[in-house]
Image 1 (tube, each protein chain N blue to C red):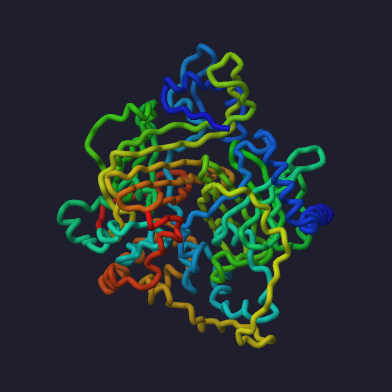
Image 2 (image 1 turned 120 degrees about the vertical axis):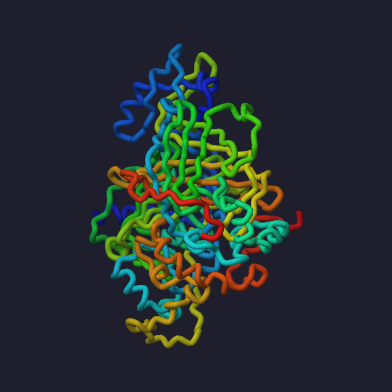
Length: 329
Length: 274
């Protein structure tokens, strides 16, 4: 019911008002808690995202027009073709929060978990923060009922969680319309996310499953790896972000978009990767092995026209130190 | 809270409360199917003591790193790989025609990359202590041996190397020190498979010639997630270390959806180019 969501808001607002000092107290409190059924895997702490996979997507971003591997529906595809990334440069939209829970998952951020302790000294929620400054996502562990489907959709949605063995499974609803591939692809406000956090010692695997009846035909599965940071846990992301709009030349009353059939991003994957539109436009079949047969001949026919390895220019490498390596060793 | 079971000897110290486990299996999908393993009871085999069921047909789901996995990556694309200069040199010299001529088409189907290849898997128990994984892409076979890590036999290096497996059991209600009279093993609520692979033949991390050496060591975690009614996802998290060609461990993850049958299973020979 809406009152449940209001209660969740109140709790979160309380955390924000009290600020970082209070959050740090929570962290310190958690440090003295025994590892028990409330936290079977010791998930508390700071986790650094591993950049050796989905490197481009999490780093500088995929090329505009790259929807390969996204199970877009016809409606979802139509929406992407109308979208212009200039839209987020409109002054009125500049400071609009665009870091949805999905972007926390597939974006460049690491993760930070800390427990929220209730009056009975039990964990009522896990707070999940990121290196960004948006409010942390609260994963309610105390049986908080789902809010009404008509309740407001806050920036982080509404999330409940439970443990299965060492795995923390979180289920998020009440999301806003938000990007699922940077500014490339969007999910609707009907979308839900099931997040499963699986600690393996100092390595944690997070599996995110996005379902969206409006724009996806099948669940969109994404996985991220994290390593435990040796840094002290920090209750980050509790402060309200300060955003200063910058005039980049987009008029305040503009609504940038592409007319149907006029999108400028179509064909970029062919230009840089020789990947045909039938793949880059996405769709569930692009997620599965059999799809390779459909593009094999066309792809291999032009493979020899790629620059040689030594002349690879675009999106070819990430500096090793950016991946966490010290190249001076 | 985890315990590991890698071999019968180790398992003696880990008692499986099967009665509880069976009742839990009905609701949570825990798999163990062996006989009672209490004090003095028989030790279940790796198959009987499996906390999760990985057997069956599985299909890759590729939603990220698409340009590196679904097609042959462009020459020189090692984005995301912490490659040392020595590795870049090898990559720059990649020649698929030469590999084919030398009969090395399977260099890009070795254990460190095979789970990233778009494919179908067929997982079965070869015997009580050996899990067998076959791939249709490249027609490879991996054997996961539930033996002591120090019992690895000396043999020739192969594309799939030698894999030692162990179940990692997740329990609640555990108490006391393992091996002591006060020890209570608790209730198994889930588990995962840990696989360590060595004795690899040098191969490619990507189809475009990014190398790994025979000194590489692969660590893999296999987890099972129920994602819907009767729908299962196998998540494979990999950590590859290779002091010859990599600055730091190369960590990746791959997903597979459980298939109801062998539909889609299409064995294909190794290819150096596709």
